[in-house]
Length: 343
Image (tube, rainbow, N blue to C red; front, side, top):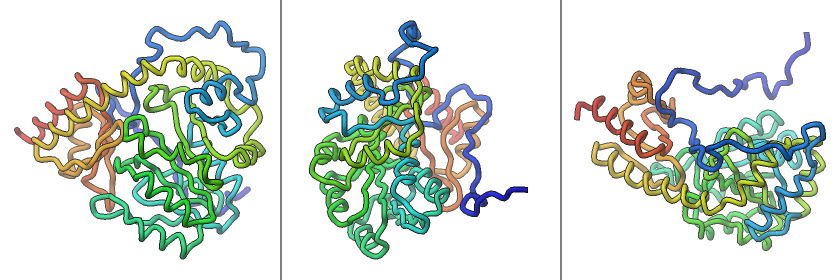
């Protein structure tokens, strides 16, 4: 029998909750607002391999972001790009550092590739002690620092100046995951700094603001030398033609995306007010979700009513991440909580 490599023996495969539901607010998904009537794939040549360079997609991303297409690499969701970064730059026992709680795939991919993952705890209110982070960087000399901003699951957004201070404090690569930036303060994005620093890259996705989680499309923006290095290790034809076609078309509908984002932000503020009125603690929100703390049985009680939210365990028991749904879904959620709380 062939043994697994040691680095994955304690890993648990990624699992989603497969239970009946009426309202699904546990995965930060959006709504099918861009292509409600379907998508015309008649121009896709199904008998051909997809464009290995995703030329049209990267060209339209270049126009959307105002950066050269040579500074962009596409991925099967930003998760693939996280793996490619570690695969490209991290040797066994190199340090990968992030600030917790945060997106779990930073740790998981680090463990798969036998890196030493170090999670710096955030403050009691889930803000970041910048001096503590920089002290840890000087101590551990990480090969990669992952910064999720806005952070999943807490919603905390770092200021641009804070991020650039971290970039300037290390010789390692700083990866800023901006999956939720469209719902946040965009002035805090470090996209405008990407030309200045040789050790800074940004990750973004079509899964959130574009409402296209099913097509698995993300992209990285960074120095051309980093894009070239990642291109060496990515699989040939790694992004299928259907995903490229839908992503390219989505970039022609930015006005529709912006209207959707504005509606989500408005609903988010209404939800925060409603939850606060029920005595539930909420934290500053910058994504398409809200991070809350309340009674430890809320997740199970809502599931009994057919409503799914994301529950956390161990040190984060009693904390929940709630996706912002439609107005009707949000009203149903609040009503269900009122019933549980006997309000």
